[in-house]
Structure formats: structure tokens, C-alpha cells
Image 1: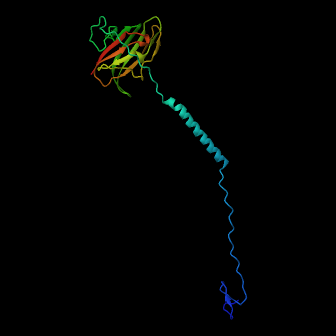
Image 2: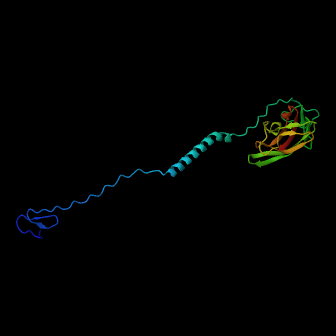
Image 3: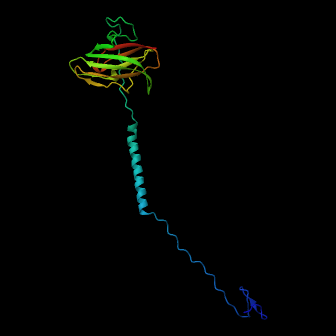
Length: 227
């Protein structure tokens, strides 16, 4: 080999040198990169799979409980609807005060101290006035039951009380913040508050106590004005 040809037949290789005729030196083959082994698929660690399974099971249990218990939590307490009672019409014996819508001859109109005595009870109702509550404006007052009979007697604030608005529409008590219901022993008393929606009205209101829990048609009546 030589840097320059030395005669006819000399040839130049890829390395830039000249070789005599008949000489050939193969260059070494370029090395091919070794093939990479196939990448194995990702494996999920056993601990991760267990945790995922536990979380999924908890979610399923929570959803099942919500489907079963949810409707019961959404139920509202429904108070009984007082039955409609027809009171014998007419002016109460000895009553000389002002007339009022639905006046009945078995009514007991409260005296000046707010006291009514009927059906083995002395019932007083006082201090009814407008009150701003969470339900809007209401008429609230204090009532007291005293059992004057010789036996236990029942009372029910929701069934026994109504407020007749100036437009003649009777409304039942607000079930929140009221006197309790139950039985009174002979000679015992119980007191508490009763509230009604006043309907944003003004004029004569009629507070009515009708002890339906005793099966009575005798009513206690309290009249008051709101202007």
C-alpha cells in the first residue's frame, strides 16, 4: 500500500490508501447493536391491588347504606290532622259579650283573667302577641292546663287548639316550641307556649280550645284584637 499509486492496476480503498493489484483487505463489519430483550408487561404490586379492592368495597357499602337509609332520613314527621267538628250554633247561656264567627251555645268564653273552666279542666290563655320567629310573624301566648277532676285526663296541644283568623280561617298550632301533650294527674298542672301563623292579618282573632282528646264539644274561647 502507498499514499500514491505505484503503477497500473493500483486501486484506492475507502481508507484513502493505494493498494497493489490483487490485494484486498476487507474492512471489519460494523458491529450491530445488540437487540434489547422484550420489555415485560407492568406488574401491579400485590399491596396496591389489595388497597384498591378495599377502597372499592367501602364505596359499594356506603352507596348501599345511602340507598336504604336515605329515604328514611328524608321523611318528615307528619302530625295528625284535626277532624272537622260541627259545634251547635247559638249564643252561650249568660254570655253578653260581642259575637264572633262560629259562635256556639256550648262555648265557654274566657273571663277577664283569661280563665275557662270546662270538662274537668281550668284552662288559662294569656299574653298573646306578635312574635317574629324563624317561620315569620306568629301569634304566641302562654297557656296553662289544670286538671280539676278526680282522675287522670288527657290533653293534646295540636288537636285541642286552633286560632281563627279575622278572615274566619282556623289554623293549627306551629309544631315547634309548644306546650307538651300527654296526661295530667288529678290536681296537676302544665304550662307552656302555643304559637300560630297570624296570616299577616289585623282585626279580631278567636283562640279556640276544643278538647278533642276528651271527645268534647265544649269549647274555650278567647277574643283579642290585633291592629
